[in-house]
Image (cartoon, rainbow, N blue to C red; front, side, top):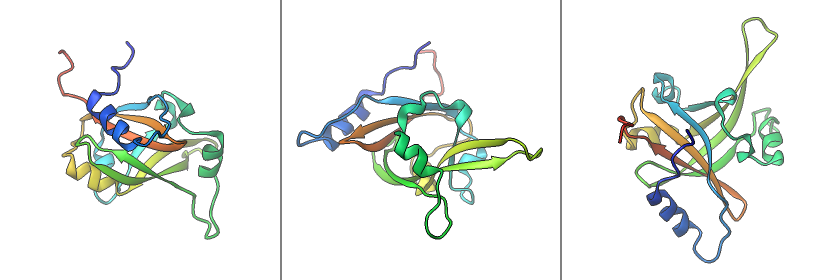
Length: 158
């Protein structure tokens, strides 16, 4: 079944962010996933978004996709700073990165997008737990990428 739309309270925050006639794109559901301990461990400080589970790869522009595969002058992978609307409707800045990891056979890589930076603050503030199911939505305000993180109710039989 198609996903439920982005909840109205998130759309209200988006409208506030776009005040003054800024252009807003339609929201895209990037991923719906159950959280793992590794997504929430403070030492890891990252939400992994496996390529194979991304529902809509058009959430990034071609330029952004390319930028995330390149390195800066210090040979560190480039990242994009993105404002995220938390489940609590607070705003935080997180970093979007791409990680390519070689598989044990050395032939294949598994690729993930990763939210890090202030991710562990977001997880803590919103009392995220392993097995919570979250949706990560993307949208743009005047071309600038933003995310919204929705925590789904545990019981989906409403």
